[in-house]
Length: 70
Image 1: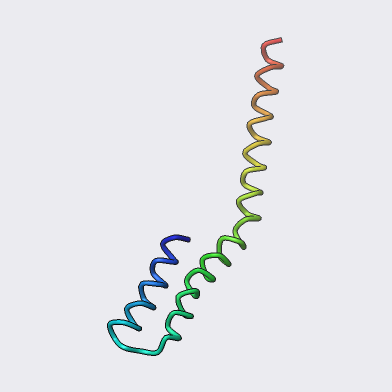
Image 2: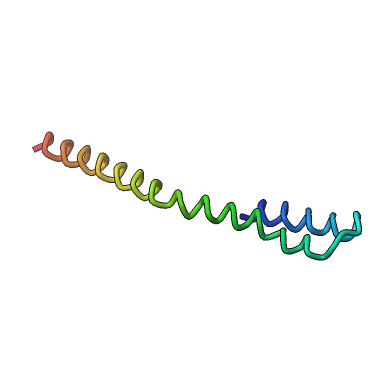
């Protein structure tokens, strides 16, 4: 998110102060943040499922190991 903010605000600052364009370029600075946030939000379900599957596999392995020692 920090990298997206740096790209957005860097572009906005460059366009306003170096190129002398309209101040509306600073509004466009939020576009990379919005895109990054949307992508991260949409991936949360997949990450949660992957973590749950890893937990189940680890739990089964621990149970099998425990039962094997008995």
